Image (cartoon, rainbow, N blue to C red):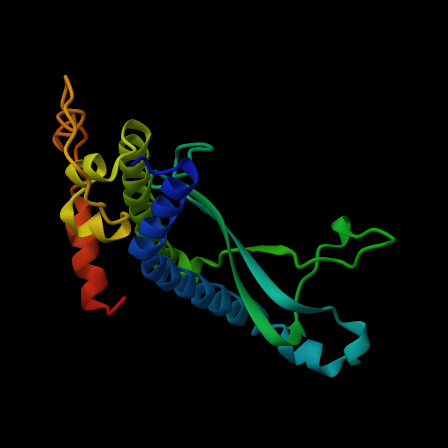
Length: 212
């Protein structure tokens, strides 16, 4: 029995989601915290003046965005290891900068992307490195799964190619009467042909300890 392309794509999505969603959510929470700290630092000296003005004279935002351009080697021009935008959401609108250059007759001014304040450089660098590491690990796992599912479609073949910890994502093997064949079709499923990413066991252990 062959697994359909649709089902294989669904299995890959489920595996990647189960492996990485918890770690990605934790990184997103740290992004939000840094954005909120950046907002607080930027707005602190301005609040006394803003609070003295009529509220309708001051722009308000429900989302604050920090532009991130991280490079490991400062003097490398336009060589960024990570380009991203970290943001925080306000339930109640707060004073904040808007981008009037992006305004049109039909649209309101969106929040302006702010630069990271120097006080948060070190903290942001640690987070950037963690993001890069997780992205690298996930891409390695994506390539491994793509290679395996591109090459094999049978449940038995996939069980031979995937580590046992991932067998739970595969359909159960239905018992069939043995058929005579000139070639054993499962003989080419030596898992050493496509190496399993080294980080898989570490990721599974981490998720287990974190209860995900």
